[in-house]
Length: 285
Image (cartoon, rainbow, N blue to C red; front, side, top):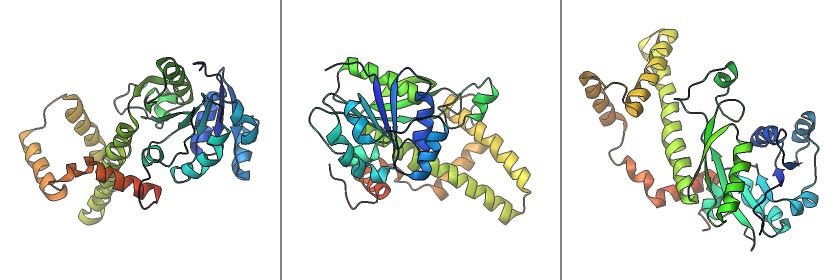
């Protein structure tokens, strides 16, 4: 089995993630084929100077096939794509939910991987306008990637790491974890917790303006600055929280956070949230 990965096919090349990773592949040394079924999305691919290909003609030639499609259709799409893949090829998905749920089609001789961007860190030192503008990553601001490749050999993993670093570039490091660990990172850590807290802060901001009559600009200035301070103190220990702040934080925990919140790290709870995300009754694994 060759460890060289030279030929790549992007399925869903006209979607949001498909367009992002295709832009990086277009500048690379890889031979890349772009596949897209939606007529509107096909126009977007062509507008960027990328030639469209039919999946049945290029998938059998590809060392890596990337499914850049929504989680809820990954199972259906993989059922169509995987049987066409050549022995030794790698199927790469961009989110762990479907892989963890056992929805991805299996074929003997095919390797499976998942790679998800961490996005540029809130603590990243940015030096250019392009880096400051790149909140999502994959354009100018460096980011890390969490990836799973549990059954391939080390040479294949190294080659796959280069593909991943290209598609999500600029990348500082690829962190290798299991599919289950990746699922605990997303959704549990970053969506169930971090994204929920972010949305909750926006709700609290709106309530401060509505209920208390604080001018919106003043509330935004106070919150945005203190988000930075809170993260710096909590994660980087730049300075300790004041005694009064600690008392207010404890009051907040009592009023807002359930004492048993860590239940989200039980596997049955992980299974529940992923089943909801994929809009299925239960996982197939």
